[in-house]
Length: 483
Image 1 (cartoon, rainbow, N blue to C red):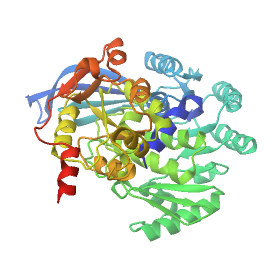
Image 2: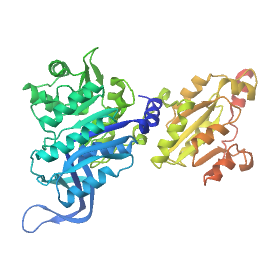
Image 3: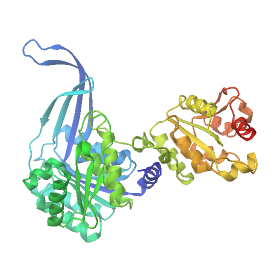
Image 4: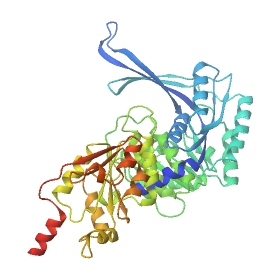
């Protein structure tokens, strides 16, 4: 997974329409401080300071898709109470949102209340009555879903076994999606997987796979054996098994299994991680991405989701952050710079830009880049191409090719992205990126910094960083040639 692949997906997201059908729930987080044990019982006493609401279940899938910029159509049912009204209003008025949330007078909206202190969940209180839809609500939702299917690039089914996905509703939708060539992805629940026949991909976790098969799946070989048999029985294109800290195992109908390693990170809360997987997998497939790459994106998104408390949507900037763990993966192509810029702006990241030839990296370069990185959240380095360096420095330069120079820059922790440009100046790169901070060395003045007037025109800053005395590539080259 590279920054280029992420930025391509981010750019494609607004053109993807995703229909999400399933069990809508309301997640409430009650946050406070535990100062003592209650006098009447040996339990912590939570002094409440805040309460927040967010859509859960299939609603969390919608929230994730909205945060990623996709056009999202929410399909589900709620009860007539205040919680249901809030949920319906929330899901149909999200940015890029729409769809149809049916109010069923015979239904109770599921609510999950989590008590949290110092980032840790103390208790969860569930308020729900699992029941199917009334006949009228089922018909209304099915009609709305079938109409929506005509607009969708992909259908996501989020099953929490709360009664929304009746046999008639689910069977009709999966059959119609298959007939229309719309990929249908299912996050399953329960033991009856025959209800998912006709789906394109089903995404059980290890425990769910064991439940439906009645067998333990401790090793990957057994997971592959059980999963492949289930895939074939249901007529799926693929089964994607979520393996927690072991990552994922993709079992396509055609081709060998694909192991996707987990991202190493501290797990704070697994709440909603499955919703995040379904959302990102569906969005990637809906944009035309191949299944293996889509699963890799989903795996990365799951890693981001478990690193935070509660059902907080993952954004493109989260997927980009820390992605450039190897030097080669930090290089981003010029044509993807605009998408990167938009992604970072939406996430309110402070972007710093500097540029140079960086031929034979020396301590002066390292110092400047380290100081530049301190001025913001993301450092993008513009790198002169080989031809550009020859025009500026003469036919004997560069010493290192642009590929080698980009890789060396990528080895620095301070550098987040490297973009190569062929012009003599980075003016057009700066106009595309629109950084908040433009950095050059102390041998410049603001009047001589290329792009400074443009950056200042929208409130950006120009920073001049003192040089390390006696350190320059020219000096290094002359010493080498002198020897």
